[in-house]
Length: 317
Image (cartoon, rainbow, N blue to C red):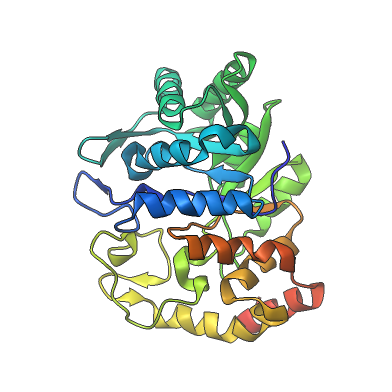
């Protein structure tokens, strides 16, 4: 499958949702019509890869993406994920299911919400699933490929050893993992080189820190996951916004990343392309303006090798 150098992540357009304890899991309120307009603008600007998950917005992200693509569905590569249990009515996550039975049921439900007859890239969304169970799910994904329901598959995990389990399958095409200029992932990128996998980059803008809009202690709305960050979400303090130490690192990198007329966000994406030719960043978006800024990075290309080295010096790597 061929995709644009940049994909769009559809977590944010799912809107507000939460876990059973009331922990927010979305990015706050969204305007669905603006989300649709942003997707249309991305298509017009040459973006051909859209990544979502059944659990984003408890099904809402898939529905919005499917509606927006409409007759242009065949122009793009659509990726979604499975493994979580949620209630669409209450928009609540209530568990996980790594069974093969759930995988098939989840795929059927995703196809319905997306309004399509196949998923281009189907991804396991349970980052710490047991490798033996993952091998069973990998083999099931091969069945999905034979049935024409899926074109390829991947695992969304930050563990290279787990990613390698899925990579043993013939139609495993990549791994989705966290990486950005503040949080490098050398072992995972080396694995992608070794096993010929696409590196799909989750959190390429460090949950918004590299977008250049966040300020020290700037409050976040109650429905935003960053207002009450879980342990894995770095760079934000509970109830008090962005961490000043992390913002200091962003400021130190600003001159390098904004070279060549780039915005800070475009420079962060350019770093990923310079870091490895296998990277496909998937920044989130909630507006036409964000879609235009992110897509605008494509024409400016990657940072140079010299700039890549300068970033490492600044960050003490």
